[in-house]
Image (cartoon, rainbow, N blue to C red; front, side, top):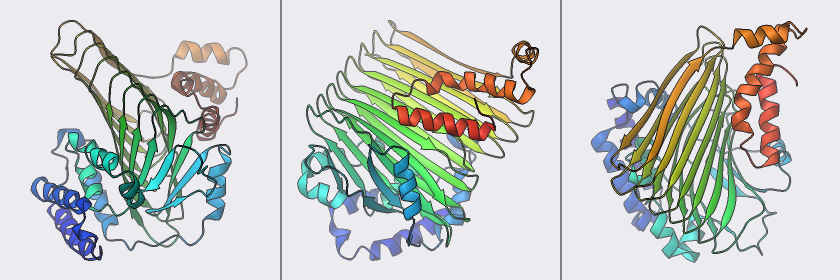
Length: 435
């Protein structure tokens, strides 16, 4: 880890020189604080309880000094991305560079800007939220993202605005010419009584592998509603660390969906803080893993005030030599009376070589609450399998039917039809069956 830390500090000094006069901005103070934290605390290793099953820092060494090459032309891929949902608003990040779709309706009250323009047009809102949400938890990879931030995506949904189109953010790694290491940064602010849907899609093109370290901050004002989707459907050459940090105000509703169907090693951190009363938080996740895929989902929900509710359901199917990690934490603070908090992680093993590490956690300081948590790890029900085969269904199709039924409980929660269809299609492809 000392070697990696030295490389990070060395890289930061070079990066600082490339800022060409922008090193005096307020944002640079945030960068300096982040790199100081990394210098003091280092990057997480195997001795860290939260990282003992996912050793990403070691993988990072391979990518940190790779030459960063701009993608020349991936028109086919961007068109393919749009084809999944033609009526959506599309935004692209290609090897770290943001590209906005020209079809964005400029007459809409919804604002989609880069950070430079956001600081100019919405300076107060930007400063009140940028790097204020993710720093509630000391996440090393979030600090790394902040230290090297150069540009970012700012989405602002004004008061009483209901956005009917979903916003599709495509983060693409074009590894045709080299290894790629990118650190996209996103800030979403939903004002009072607003409503929107955001979809983060992760793609990879090329034969080399890539590492993406994302940080998404989300602030929901009073009675705001936001659906947040994260789709990871890559090959086994993809490494990912992503922090999604959320703060919710009174009456707001936040629903998160995370679907991981591929990747060499993926780590998803979801930190949510409920800061007032009558807040709802829903978290749904599904992972379907083959080969040597490794997926690690960490979530933390902090109930600070009374009369709030959180629900969490993650389900996984593991085949071959794949590994899944689930670590969910629910904190119910002393003042959070009348809290309802439920958490469940269920896993289905299709191979004796697949592995699951699951650790649901519940810490309660209040006494008038309804809370539960649990986890299961099992195999296919032999009686159900026998029933299907006895009616002439081949074994492969019978297994496919049962596994699809198992994971469908999560997929059916998705409210955007185009996403639901895409997930069903991906599931059929990866499980090698057709219903």
